[in-house]
Structures are given as C-alpha cells and as structure tokens.
Length: 104
Image (cartoon, rainbow, N blue to C red; front, side, top):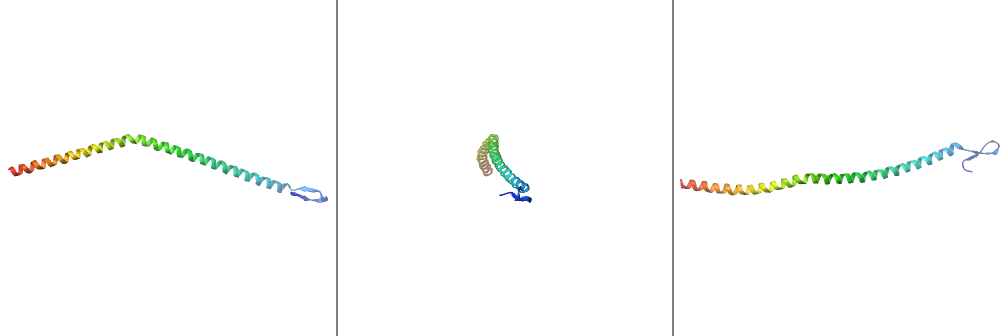
C-alpha cells in the first residue's frame, strides 16, 4: 500500500507527511504551469497591442510631417527654378559687362 506503513500491532498507518509533500508539490507545479501560461498569454497580447500602437503612431507622425515635407519639396523646386534664372541673368550681365569694356 502506497503511503501506508505498518506500525505497532500491525495496523496500517498513513504517512501524512509524505502525502502532504506530494500534494503540495503537485499543487505548486500546477500553479507554476498555470502562471507561466497566463504570463505567456499576457505577454503575447501586450506585444500585439504595442505593435498596433507603434503602427498607429508611425501613421500619425507621417500624416503630421507630410505637409511639411510637401512644403519643403515645393520650396526646393522653386529654389532650383530661381537658381536657373539667376544663372541666366548673371550670364547676361557678364555679356553686357564684356561688351561695355570692349566699347570703351
């Protein structure tokens, strides 16, 4: 018989200490396993929520920055056009300066 010992008078006696240890160990193992499963589930849920939140923040930042980006791009295009006009005007001025130096 498991968990029983023979004591005086050959009557079976229950070994409560060993039974309690086994029950406590089983309970602890089950509790640990349950805790680990719960922690894994919560971690996975938290990770998904964080990922979704990060994606939302990236979209929000992109939407906030887009008008500034568009404005900078437009200004850059205008600056290029102005630079082309400036180069043409400078070339014309140099021609006028050269002609006036020859004429004098």
